[in-house]
Image (cartoon, rainbow, N blue to C red; front, side):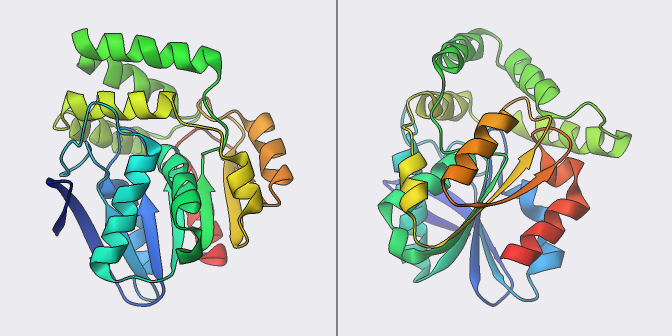
Length: 256
């Protein structure tokens, strides 16, 4: 299914019936990353799963996809579907967008669940990494994609998990480079939303991985505690839904 946002097609899936849960994927991902949840959740919940602009089957909005604009897409999708109150789950970049949603339309959000994500902005070092990423994407996008996927998994990936990541990597080959660059640019300039999360009156949860090379564990743990969130820690790297599937699903079933 698709709807139109600023003359740009945005693809989304809907599965199941019940209280609505919006699932926001991360960088270099698409709605397909959530397929593993559909059999587990669709019997009791309505899953709303968009392809964020520039990824999956959705179009590219501009040269920079700010977290605010991505949140505007989510808000427009909820208005299109006439959905009133949601639980919001975001992985990595999807978590950054979830936090922008908290700022944009907090009254529609009952719970927010951040998977391998943080309300903190990029460090200066990370911003420099983003700048280098944009330069590499101009010249060698395949090399950038391969490098990103090689860094996101933990040290103990099974062969099955490696194959899943390889499938994701192949899917990214069909995404427009302009959309990937727009997301990098947007993440680079995202603001600190720690206070937004701290002031949010609904329920808030973090799932953090101790060996996550993208979201540093200790400082994010401290931030989560300061925000009054419930925290669940797992071993492994940045892709907890793949690396710790059973534990992640059990956690989500408990808190959704």
